[in-house]
Length: 328
Image (cartoon, rainbow, N blue to C red; front, side, top):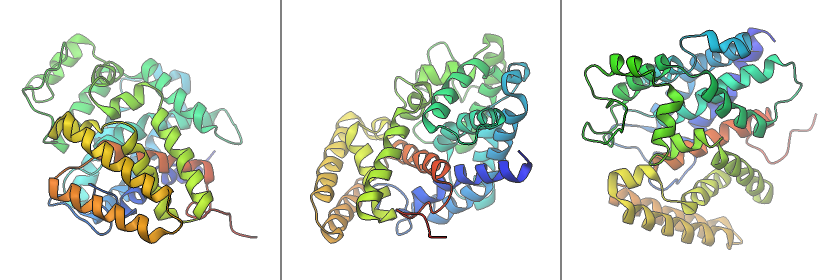
């Protein structure tokens, strides 16, 4: 497969970033009708565009090296770092894609490996399962160094120098690089440690079960009513209603996260029981205003949905926003 073909796959992966942000009203998160102080809807559009090159690099790396990835000093980390850095530098805004970059990068590398096997189609479940397995096998301490650099650039408020990091150095440690390399802490090790309290890390090490579930949910709802925007919002609410968002837990506490989960469940039940979209939209707007007033941002759930859209785009390849392909 040539460069153009691999770039096309990178574009499919990058679409999730902008299509997730475009869905509205998506309670608690940036969408096309709600900005945050440090991140605008347009920042996410910029991120999607600049993400194509790093994601292409990940796909090309997997395509070129496959099992020989074990001989590389860096496989994943520089892609995560570049995606975050380029997004923020280009838009001039805050962090839009740290979590999404952590989720998408192993998929990009794994996708290149799958495409190199000359398969006509890529099985999404196998792709995601292998993304986790390859990360465990091929990630390196240099990848961890780059992850730490990405976090330092994004500077999320919920990661503090007082956080317990177990046997691993704090991301804010002055000599984090030396400590990581001396310990030989691979990216997989860091994500496995973080998976006990971070939904994004948990999703990667578990082989993307929430992404797989969300892809199926988008397909089901889009097939039912044919509205792309409503399908994405419903998938987001479904995911938010299923378990507490760990970003909300870290910023506001478990009780608030459980309350948000309960409200999301009530809202999605209203949407699924509604024969029309007006009542559903009214209830979703109510929740969006409530979470905005509370200052609550379920960002980890948004990351999961963004990647689910990316995987859905990979599966569909064309007529992504439609319930039926165009007639030829």
